[in-house]
Every structure is written in structure tokens, then in C-alpha cells.
Length: 373
Image 1: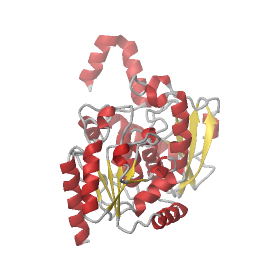
Image 2: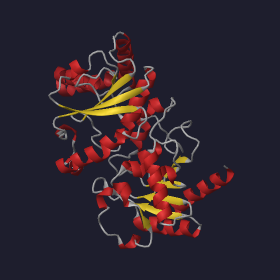
Image 3: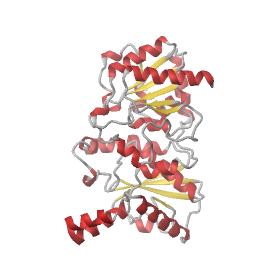
Image 4: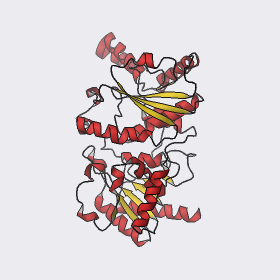
């Protein structure tokens, strides 16, 4: 720690030290800072005369968030549930904070510009972020606030997540949330009953009687090294079909409108691309869900009711799935579960690629597990 401070001082002077300290307070990167801030926020929280003793306010600030309007927001909701739980509260409400909901240029890099282009940003805001709040039973509602809102006044005497948020403090990172979740019990996400009803009707109308296995593909213009090896997935689909299962492809939303001749012989459920309630309902209904490393997998990973295999957990060439990122969360490369005591369903992480042989091997492990269950 002292060596790092000295290095910064030599390179940037006193101003660099002050800037680094301010940055560390806003977005802590070391266990020492996180523990100190957690203790401080816990102390401050106990001193407040809260106006609502049953509801926590979870502020998702799009101006400072490194997550943006993506499926990572599902993990933010988990963090809010855990924060409410620690305060003895039964629910939380989400406040989305941002300057007319425009992306923050400070949190962009060149590759991520596609995602944060205004039309894409707004689509993801209204079709991913907002609908996700409806899938969490502990979330009582969502409000949209412009950047001109006097956030300090609005949050006065409220239980807040992130702790003691005031408009400039850090947005929680995935490792913050994972570290808390791995030691706690929580509800997570749940499919709406109406969505489950629609899926049952869809299966009946398509005369699908075999157990379905969903295959959720990634075909995205950002971080393309994570995209699915489509021909391996097709061969895998033919394999499980011969084994008596019904493969159902769920395309990437970004390419859902494009015709894919190689998939015409299979069932494609593209309705999941446009409605998260239907997507999670499909996942909870399926016999098994198999994912590439893609955002929508969070709907199964944070549901107690879905069986899944998540492939391609790491990729050295990816911006978002380097091994170091998982180590920083406190995970071990090769561990088979996100959470040991979350669900009694088959919820497995595969750290291998999505080649045909790996997909088949992982599937056969599931079949063996299910036969014993």
C-alpha cells in the first residue's frame, strides 16, 4: 500500500495523491477501503431517524455507473436486496438517476461505444433495466430522476444503497455484490405467473411434449470473442434432439431480426428477446438452460427455479471475462457454482469453451445428476 502511494507521489505529486484518494473513496478497489467504508456507512445508518422503516432506496446512477443499462443491473438488484436484508427491511425501491438518461462519456471506451450510443442506450434502459425491476419480489417500484434532482434532500433520513449515496459516491461493483451474496441467503429473481402461463400455452400450441433445453446464443458487436460458436451449438442441438429432448434456440436480441438459415430446422423462441417476463418464464419452465457467456444468463443465475449450465466463463481476450476479474470477486477459477446454498436446482458454471464436445460433456453430467435426483 505504502509503495503504491509513493509511486503515485513520484509520478503525479501531491495532487495525484489527493485525486487517487478521492477516487478510492468513490469507487474502492482494495479490501481495506471497502471495509472502512462499510463500517462507516453502517455507523451512520444507525444514527438516522428514517422516515420509512420498511423500504430501502436503491439508487442506480447512470452518470457514474460502470454497468449502464445492461443485464448487470440484475446483480445491482441483488445487492439492494442484500442491503435491505442487513437493515432488517422487507423491500426496496429503485431510483434511476441520470442526466436525461444519457450515457456518461467518462465511463465509455471505444469498444463499448456501440452499447452506449444514445438510441441503443435508451432501448436497453426501457427494455432491460426497467423490466428487470418487475422480476424481483422485494422491489416495490422504480422511479426516474433527472440529474437536476436534489438527491441529498430526497434521500434525507432514508436507508440507502449504495451505502450513504449522495450523488458522487461509488456505485457498487460486481465483486462487492458477489462477496455479500456468497455468504447470505436471498430471494433473487422470479418469473411472473402470467409469463409461466404464456409459456405453457406456447408449448401446448406447438405440440412440444419432450423436455425442452434452451440454447441462448451470443451474437453481439461488442467483445465479439465471446460470441457463440454457432455450428458447435447446432451440432449440440442435433445431439440432444436424438437423446429425446427438444432444443429451443433463443437468439441474441441484436441479431434476432436477421434470418439464420442454419437454424430453420429448430424451434426458435425470439419472443424472449423482446420481453424479460417471457424470457425468465421460459428459463424456469425448461428442463435445462445452456448459455454462452452472455448477459441474459443472469435471469437463470439469479433464479432459484432454473436449471442451467453457463459456459465460457473466462476468456483471456475478452474485455469482461478475464480470469483476474473473477479472482477479484473472490471466486476461484474452476468453481462449479456461483452460490452453494442458493438453490437445489442444477446451476453449474463451465470454465471451458463452447465447443461441441464440451457442450455434450456438460449436458451428460446434467443427465446423470437428474437421474439420481
